[in-house]
Image (cartoon, rainbow, N blue to C red; front, side):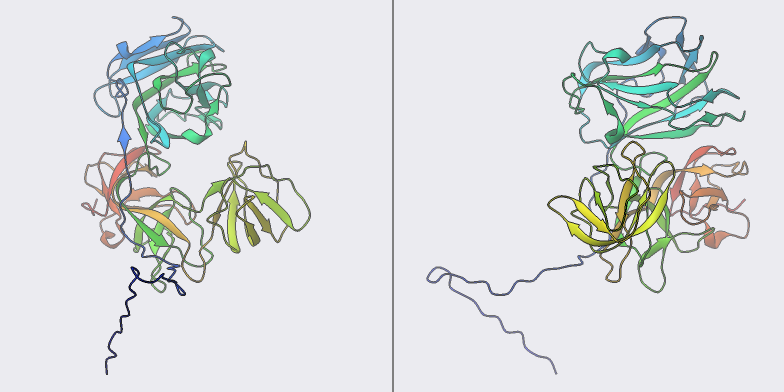
Length: 418
């Protein structure tokens, strides 16, 4: 038996309306949603023409165009001819560009065989005032290598993704909000003589995977209970909950790559080791609730915390445990774990082109099928799909891949088996 719906109307022209009951939707529909996606190469950022780049002082940090570019015919090679050169190579624009819409800047890179780069050796910078194009007058800068990097000799291309919120802003310079960008550059401080750094395809973009822009469909999906996902994680469908979990090796239920955890925020104040309860001040507590969360940094340190109180006015989280020391300088972040009602969600790129790291050199053909090669809890590495692994292929390679090389993969489109 069906019950007829009853609709009552109020003539608000004659009487005031009093709303006694309201409907609040706690868990809105999750699925495909419009997301602003943009990736843009600035003029000269294709690194095809050496004339787009200028040496601050010739003979110390030199620039040249070389063939075998990662994208297109050429790449730009920076060569340090003396140690601790204190010199820049920069790319000027004919007119400024507004990139306030961007969250990341990234580029392909490779170094010379056996080259060693330490933090502070070379910086990437953005200048935001016409005429202030030397490193000394930079508005925003960041270490290109934040951890020691030694090329083992294979010299494959990798991808460098730099978070624009983490750039150091120089005091006293106008327009450092990226509304007026006049160029980019590299500054060598303490690198080794004869070190080389090849750069290709510089671009600004809004959604990143850790290895470059996310170019494809992004869906919003709740995560399973107690599960935490970060940008770059491989996600898989949980067959019992209809949510996502962190993918494991050769996961047949691969769902895509996490491009964002909307509850993620950074520290506003350093956290020192202290007694229970501990109060943690974050930049934005609006998406946090009582429950469990993950805290981690680039050290790397990581632990699960239980939130007992949230103050959305002061942006303070009270946690029921002693916490290790975390600092803003180490890029400490927090994000909610999945919960019972499925209100904690992550944004996942389900199909489209994503850059991924090769585990071996067997990706020898364009269109070859690839599968996940790493364990749970990390950015997904890829491996040869194999002749009998059609069920676990996550996509197809769009380039051949050497060991430790980053290549683009078309997700959601199985390729040919090897």
